[in-house]
Image (cartoon, rainbow, N blue to C red):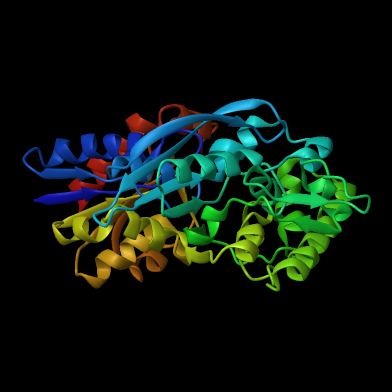
Length: 380
């Protein structure tokens, strides 16, 4: 039997690589002679870089400016192609991640994407002709302005002065000086992984929907939203392009700057990463697929990693099993996607007052994931 083990991350407890190792341990207890392939997946957010490195991309680390000016070490990856070019993979969470910033109202206005732009510059210096941008886990709500500033763009206020970094300054921008913008951007293919449909601004936009997660209070949300409206207007006046499209609100509006100044394309995260890593060829060799993630819920059913993989396996007639930390959808929901069996860690974690001990499930996720996989296969 050939088993493809391809989980997404179990956020807060296991990376996708660690989850794959635990699932493999459980599978081999039941089928010791199975040929097991571990293949971490991602849906374009956090974990995209990990999936790329697992698929053979070369990981590199650069010191960059973090989301509130403190330096951080940020990883990215690159792989040469057979045509003399190279594809780089960059995650906003690495250089401009919320994990590098305390989420306060003040910081929500100061946070920026400058470090992401520095990673893009490093990728261009390394010969990248295609750059994949994975969005998720970001600290900023700056419309991607910081990233373009790192690449030479100068946003100016009414006095002709470059405005401070951060989303809180977007409302002060009246013009853009693009004379020093890196010319390589025009020759580079940008593919942006997006799994949300939020526009840049408005009640469903970046500030209102995601700003509170980054520390923005009601006043900060309004300031950020007004700034993004102005940013979209200035971008349109400068480039003639409308950046307020579905998906532009992801990662604090990060796509907007690139939609305006490059020929960037927004793509579904799972499909983009699957193509990037060669998931199709892995499926072709599998008799069984085991996937999973930390929480399998209604959002998962919209095509995120494990369900996207299940759909692809179903279309090839390959049975799928799912193991997750928590499952809040029905077996019938999963069956529509070709999932023949599922197990959650909460069912085998310790109990406290008759209820599953979530803290125990998180702390001992690898142990329970292996056990849940074994039990699932024994009952399949």
